[in-house]
Length: 366
Image (cartoon, rainbow, N blue to C red; front, top):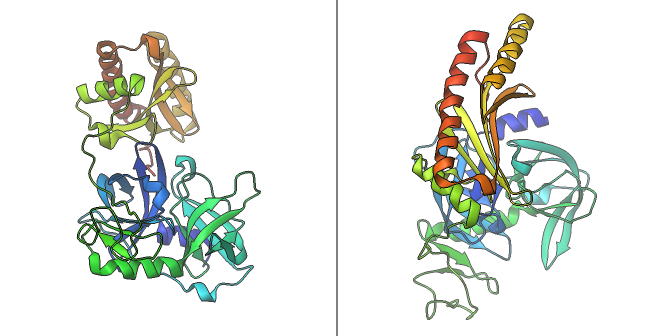
């Protein structure tokens, strides 16, 4: 099976995972009705946001963590049509076998990188890992490593910083073991003891924090007593979004990044603390294909930019983008509400107008 066929098979099973501090990848295992990812992706959060091809962004509970194997399981969204993917056999893998790593590196959704297995059983800290030369980048973590049969044979886990495509995936044999161990505890929040591999739940904790088998201290994820809120400019941005009726927690896409929908337009808000700048970018429709329409469109965009104040229309590859940029010291809550509202309203208006007047295409969402 070639990489294109593998991507087509997996695109509806790949899940993007976001926490207040970052993003990662997961994949759906239908047999167990769970989303698999790395433990470091969920970053000690009891609840994360998940997004897939077949469902809107939603909250989901983390139901299992395993620090030793860097595994976590997340509850699957109710009612979503998610495909079945097969778990392969690690023992069939050999050095030199071709593999594909799938994930969301740097927010580039559904990216697949090809490579080969450099060493099928690299030992690190007492565990076997599959060493691969396929590029794995931040955001790939938790995604599947797939063989040429289209089967999952590993979970992409980490890279060696400064190495030349030195990536490592946890073998599927460890994943199968964890899935089977958790099966009797489905619906409960559980953790695997780092020392003895005993599955710990709230009912089996000794004195509320120790493994009932070996006495090692184990932390079970629990809802926070108080939600952690951002500070400074990030909090101001969230206050503005809240004032405009947006669901702030669902809007979060990692540290200092937010995304909301307004009509048919997708809007991203970012804060760059290094340069003290807040930017809003509304991704509208795609450019038309007719040359005459493109020329007329460019003329219109230039004229609109001359008339507008505070917002700018531009073209980024095939996308038409409506943007603002403001220094954090110039952003107030009242002024921000006006600025953000203007961006949201104009984005929806422009999107409809450009498609109707110039034959622009509906933007393809990843």
